[in-house]
Length: 277
Length: 255
Image (cartoon, rainbow over all chains, first blue to last red; front, top):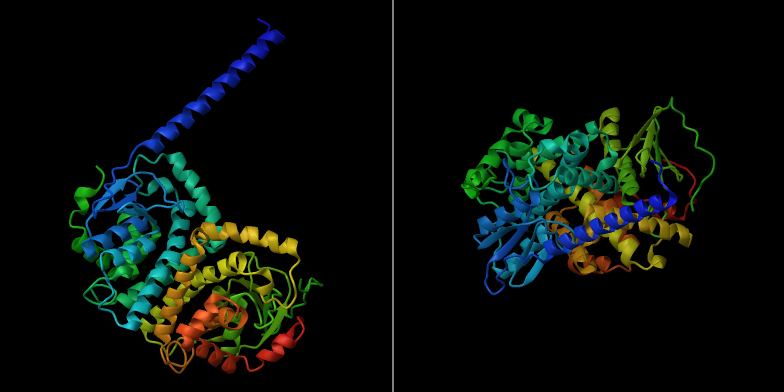
């Protein structure tokens, strides 16, 4: 059957109408999802931690929610998790809400909570130890983080890492492309696979050498830097157990694995119960 | 901006290290980028024979500085230092304990991966372009182009997502950590300088000597004067020719 010019025009119009319909439907669903109310009780003192859902091997595939939640547990601040893919005003996750105030960024959240709840996990440290604590925090979050992110998203198959099933594969792959772009701008992404592994090894060595036989970085009491180191190391020790970084820790820096177990047993006794089924 | 002349000729048979840095000679610092200043301070500290060349050629990683030694190009200031340590049998951290070496790395990374971005955000987003402190002025179009790219990098890295006040606060906490750790010591780890001193000096010199109009410089003078004292100590010890370097032209200088 030969299509006339009129038929073709009709088909084009129909295709266009369907396309517009699909776009409108998707947009409406997006707005519907946004309007879905999150369960904040702004009059209470509860801190709401907005983060992506739990993994099967680790409470979060991202180090920052684990850092933040570990801090809240150590400081004994009442909190409630809100598992949602809702990003902060800075376009990142996790973030907190407390008495109607949203605070993005895990470190700003901790500084805010220190003030609100009169907490200081570093009160027992000397001035020099506080300085070292900040240095380790920044090394882990601004250097080691990028090295491990390059491995997870660029050098290896991100689908092997423990992500909750609600995050579709296409979203992970898209995020991976973004990480590749960010890592190039940050600098780490310009190095080779071997160079990044070398950088990772030097960071592990620094943490391991400083920790030594101590229970926590600065002795018998944990501080914020311990939360950050823990959040980052669990990704290697408990999440990506197949990685060469895991083997490196087991072979050369076993005290880092011991440290992860110490933190987990002390502050996450419910670890197995809270993981996704 | 800078020299875009013919490619430099390297004598790959000699043991001289060719130190290539982008021509960002400042009015008050040898280079507006902290990394060339870090690497050159290391070369002077380690007494490694080197020839400084200022050209616009970036490294294979698209950055500055880089070195060439016996026909081998090495990019990234830290990889350069690791390479040179091996080649010349140098270890500026030899006198440090294992724990101090660990702290040394942590401070190095705090300075280069955190404080660096505070500097970048200040210079490219909050500072008046005329206060950049360059010896030769930037064509405005190039400035605008670079600024746009840097905005993308800073947002991706994370620092660019914070407000000016938050970025200033982050910088303040880094300064405080450096100041508290340094205390009254001559260098970060005592009377002998080490590798991380090169990096800390390269970064702090930007605030203390170059961006003298910045709130960061005022903050250091008021609340962390030992950081200013430290910068002068490093400058007087390893850059006795600082003023001559600033006055000199942008051609190669043999050291």
